[in-house]
Image (cartoon, rainbow, N blue to C red; front, top):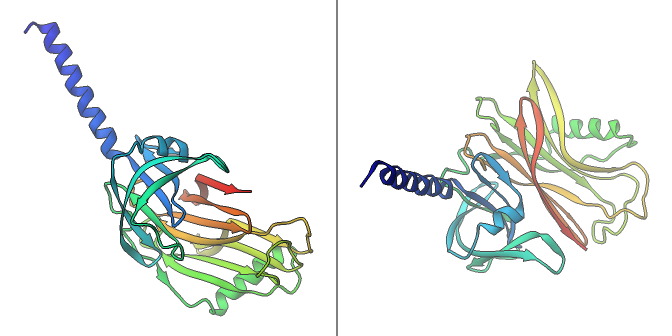
Amino acid sequence: MNSRSSLLVGLLLLSGVLHAADDKSFACFIELPWRYVIGGRANGQWLKSEAAGKRLSGAKSEYRVFSLTGEQGKVSGGKAAPDADICPDIWMIDITPEPDLDKHMIGVQAPWNPMPRVPKVTSNTQEVYLKAVRDLLSGKGMANPKAEITQLLRVDLDNDGEEEVIMSASHFKNREEMLMATAGDYSFVALRRLVDDKVQTQLFAGEFYPKADENAAPSVHEVAGLLDLDGDGALEVLVRSTYYEGGGMTVWQLQKGKLIKVLEIACGV
């Protein structure tokens, strides 16, 4: 074999190795039970639902399934395709066994541990956090707000040895219908953290209604997952938002003290 042939063979082998490495580094995240592809991660970049879905060509892959309290098992994922009838930008994946429609969880296919730290679920009646909710609502122009915390979680997001608090709070006078907003309605997810010896509250997502709004379709916002989706040891915060005709998911990172949204899907009528 001459030197040129040896060079070509070497380049082909290197290309194969790099391609294999790229495939190995690919991670995909799915929402259960509705089977939506939230997105993915490859070559140091976030992939939207469509880009990640196109990589799921049919070969079966194992997804580890997580709730906020830890790993809950595994499912097998196959081919993905767009939700052509309603949300063509959002891809859906074939899952076996069939997901339990009453259980909302996150499936992760990744070569690293997606949950290096499990959050602590704490009491949602602690006065210090109820006051924080009232203060936040007052700052949004709401008079005499009713504080109702639905989730209160402690976890070290950025792996610096200090725990942060993530809280969800929601109050709706007509929770059964949710076809309009009444005065005093709200729903939000926020981060409480210590910065320069002072506690700061930062919003991930939220809606606030100081006045009634007959044209609004209020959403309920809650924490869906606290997972390492890019393999750097820090945890991303997944926020689920739902309203009467649909919903979505956003993925957030804490970067240098700022909340950055890195992925988003939304689907509804």
